[in-house]
Image 1 (spheres, each protein chain N blue to C red):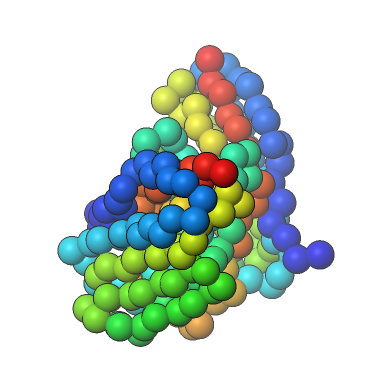
Image 2 (tube, rainbow over the protein chains, first blue to last red; image 1 turned 120 degrees about the vertical axis):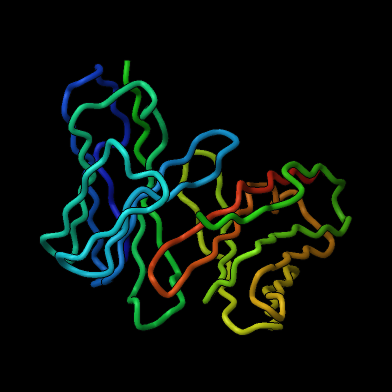
Length: 115
Length: 110
């Protein structure tokens, strides 16, 4: 089944404790992206990747890191989480930049709480 | 930062009524998508529009992309309770950046 998977689905952590949220897709998609969703603010793009070893900042990259060493995986790293990073996080993938349509397929979300 | 203004933010209607949701920007997008999101789940793609002036229909849903590719609308005919959900528009540039509207929460009462 074609899908985007995220782990963990739920995470409660403390300020400053490094964490990684994994994202994997099995559709051989070139484009992957991370978003956070907060009440009243919609989905905001954190980082995106056009292909392996190519990443770029979205609108809210502060406090986050990403890497794209393999096509299927795009982990989101919070080196020192803070309470303002409490949010619902979504990973998404899309076929290719060349297709130009950016039809994104989303994972189920990761609800992160930082105390 | 490109902005997408979506309106209305909330919409509560009776079954059988028609409605339109708007998505407006001052920026030009290479493509625009409409998604629907259920509570606790990720957004699911409804449609992509690419060409200025393009109109697409999906059963009772009609999507239109503005001639200048800066705005779009979603029209639902004879809304049903199953249409209830959060509707999101998203614009994309060729550089890979994505911008989402804040969403329209639609409630259709039986």
